[in-house]
Length: 254
Image 1 (tube, rainbow, N blue to C red):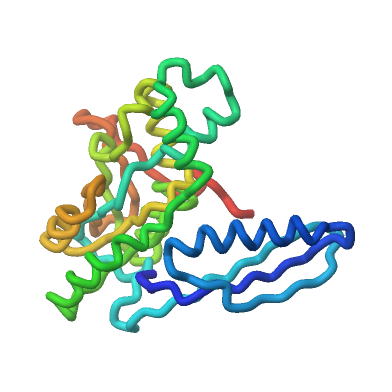
Image 2 (tube, rainbow, N blue to C red):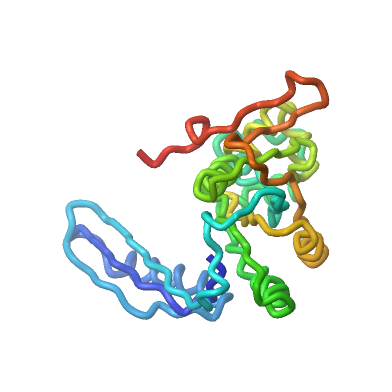
């Protein structure tokens, strides 16, 4: 939501036979992840449980005027993605199928696998967003992350804001590695519904969007919001090339 991290709390439920070494390694791993963002573990709780559970709450700070919400997008705004999609799903497929990556170099294969195993929160974008807000104190940016899939994020923002969206398939960024790995139809499915990419999907005025993507390598404007009620994917130029995107097609929590 545009916040800078302050810390996380960790609540553990542990089986009685869980070793102290396992717990120590867990915390060392979390601390290693947090160190790169100068973010500490500031508290939590521990209790006995029939299964091991981990519940983490992340706490941050942001000016009320600069909170990124799903509900504030306006028609005719640009829709921006902070980076490529489909990579995490491709990495998962490579991890599950040893023979799948024969057409990839070891560097390409490992890169996709790491995209799945070591997702990076896009906190690096905050300074660029701050500069936009500093230059226009009335600027509103709508958005959310795409951890549940790109299509899901676009639909959620559209529904919460009461707008529609038109997305162009040819503008959806992904690496050439995916084209070596799967046919175009599969790649499009991974990009839209693969999930776990943890990029940002942002809606803001078109002129500001152009400024934003100049400073974020790999980012792209993939479409615009509309006065319609539907989220439409344009896959070509003929009339039958429009696909209506809904949340039913992607990941569902329940």
